[in-house]
Image 1 (tube, helix red, strand yellow):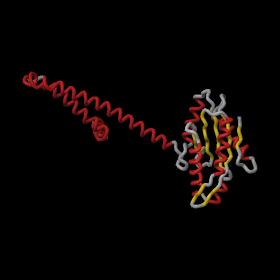
Image 2 (spheres, one colour):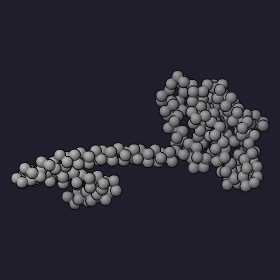
Image 3 (tube, rainbow, N blue to C red):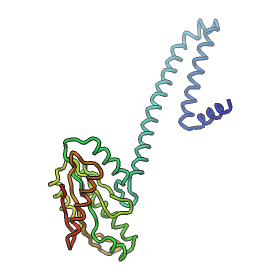
Image 4 (spheres, helix red, strand yellow):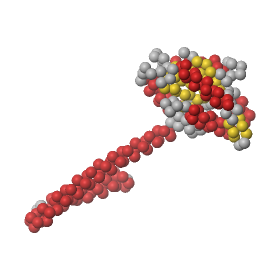
Length: 250
């Protein structure tokens, strides 16, 4: 019994629940009031006939208000859940989608394979470890942030852009409805854009180059085979002496 009382009191203290509680309290009070008046002769003949319709109309409006309140609360709740999910799937450094979002997106793509082509571009910064050692992690983090923003601005609205690994310097772009030849063109454009960009940090310009591995989703692909081709393409690109190269793996 004490548990029920405590639960009820807790329910009343909640802001939203208190509103519902108060509304229901007035509804129940109104219903009881009408029922009591029916047993009072004077009220039954005179007072009740005049106000019963108004009271029931009032109760109907209250019930509609409760329904609308639930709808608004449901919409607000969904917005909060969506915001929490976005925060949980966003990389803090680059503000791109993180590995959790990537795992979810890949899972959906591999589970619901459709006939529309899907291509993948894996991007890795050349010699970034040396950059870290020379300029420090603070500057390197700013570079990652600026590069992530550049890739996001250069991508189509239908593309998904991810930071490939937590604490890594790799980025992955999922190009939906894109054949591999067009994905290679996009990768070449991004590679050139990055090499042409001056990343200004504290008054100093920094230049970067990247290598890209490109592949297209196959009918018999799973996550392992897909990532294996991407990594192989990236490794092939990095074998180039000057790096700064794009390789496709079919």
